[in-house]
Image 1 (cartoon, rainbow, N blue to C red):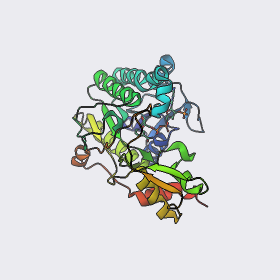
Image 2 (cartoon, protein in one colour; image 1 turned 90 degrees about the horizontal axis):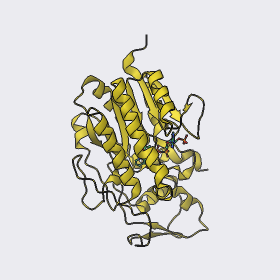
Image 3 (tube, helix red, strand yellow; image 1 turned 180 degrees about the horizontal axis):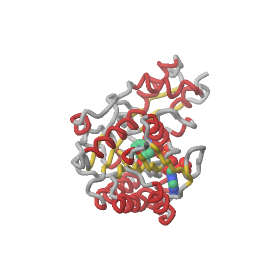
Length: 304
Ligand SMILES: NC(=O)c1ccc[n+]([C@@H]2O[C@H](COP(=O)([O-])OP(=O)(O)OC[C@H]3O[C@@H](n4cnc5c(N)ncnc54)[C@H](OP(=O)(O)O)[C@@H]3O)[C@@H](O)[C@H]2O)c1
């Protein structure tokens, strides 16, 4: 018979990370209620997270033992274009879900971002003081605060730029770089300035599973956790790695740009958001897929 401890309510199950989380928990025998909004495929449930009544109805009817909130507006430029809409999904829906989780007495894991930091003093420990540079980072930080304020036993997992199997190349800020390699007739400049530690979504999904299991065993497993990949790259470094994995030429049409972004750029991004992952590692949690291996499997279907 199904045990009450293996019922996951997962928002954003149609997204880049949510798809991996869904698969990881389902493979482990969990019953997953995955929600989607515009990309409702078989097995997922349509749910507008800004509709408080419907959200409460869906969660309480499903009776989860754990809740993971992956859904968000996570494109910083889109947050700038629609700050009110972004706050509804990134902050208000987190607060509302946390209240429902609290009412049902189940823990909630809120997925957050390295963009809560300004990138000036890495590596960032879990207790480092956040100082987001852009509105996206601010909304995600407010979502974290709401989640932790409502349920003291809740969890926040901050992650860096993600990649993995994509539905379209621009779905990930990493996989989109393949476009610059494919279109050899278009010379381009790629940033060789900001530093990132990309993570494969399967690594994060595994961490979510380990955290859920440990939290259900021990209520002291709560608060803020950090994970990021072990390799530090600029965008240009990532492009060179992709080129090397697929034997694609780049040096005649891709120019590394080592300058900071111009001051007129509207959406500011942090310089180096490397996260200190020791809290998870002390719990025996964490896995890093080497970038060349992860990116090869993610992009193989897109390279002829
Ligand atoms: N991707 C990254 O590089 C990255 C980096 C750091 C942190 N994160 C964080 O990781 C989490 C997952 O990100 P992701 O990359 O998987 O995002 P994503 O691919 O953009 O997916 C976003 C998800 O949110 C859902 N959603 C958006 N608005 C909704 C609404 N009003 N009601 C219900 N669902 C709604 C989307 O549903 P539909 O698509 O079906 O509309 C989708 O499932 C987010 O919290 C993000 O902030 C991501």
